[in-house]
Amino acid sequence: MAVLNSPSLIRLFRARVIVLILTCSFVLCVVWNLENKTPEISTELMTDQTLEYFLSQGKIQVKDAADIEWAHAANSKNKITEALQSSAHMIEADILLRSNDPKEPIMAHPPETDSDVTLRDWLKEVKASDKGVKLDFKSLAAVAPSMVLLDEVRAELRGPVWINADILPGPGGKATPLDPKVFLEATVTPGSHGDVLSLGWTTGWTADTHNPGYSWEMVREMEAVCRTLRHPVTFPVRAALLAQSFSQLHWLLQQSDRYSLTIWTGHTDVFVVKDLLPYRSEIDKTRIYYDLLDSQRTQLRGLTGY
Image (tube, rainbow, N blue to C red; front, side):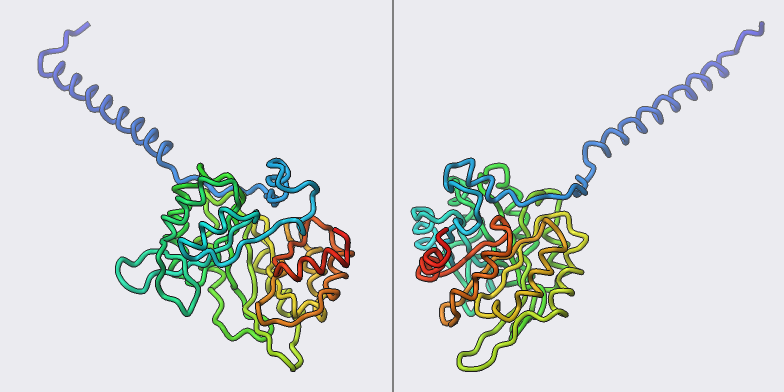
């Protein structure tokens, strides 16, 4: 057998070193990619765990969405303190992007453009409680930075998280809805697994005139938007428009077990509480929330005995 001369040994050694370096580089690259791979969004169908959570906490005694109480417009330091000390199960607040520097998500409802509390500080207050939160987005620009802040504290939030926006034009609506595609791209993230998406229509109501309800075109368009979502979805619907919309909304609920309704009312709206009875009697009680004024809630309880 021929003995390799010194230059041959050197070339062989160099070749083996190069192969070793390339192999190690490949392994390190694979490991880095595995560790830094963006988490995938779950494809598993999710269900609304709001009632299960409050049952487990002893805050409600039966699985009835009508028992969930709400604190509204907790958009200031004083309001969030009041809400945390109240009997409310869910705290609702509105989010805008501050118009001046520093441009960051703040708790405010138009026409307000500033607030004494940012979303970051608001979440610090809420995460210490056992209440759920409903974040109502009034600005598309506020959504993405708000979801980043929300993801930072998710592990510390104990209660349900609802993400709300009006994404389609509805009956009498004059405000511009948030773009549904952009909104959902920002809110449906790996971290949002289990969030309830509260997706509504812009609406309006005028006294002493006929106010149309939710049309078939409106509910079908909403169903088309939500059909491929994996999250639980609740549709906020205006109480004063429900009497003329039962068939359409009942159909909407039948399209998926993930869907529910949240009935809400404006402070100046006029409606007959008994118009809610078909919804109360013909729809599963776990699938219809009542975000009403205290006097309206009391009247509904008197009519239905819940």
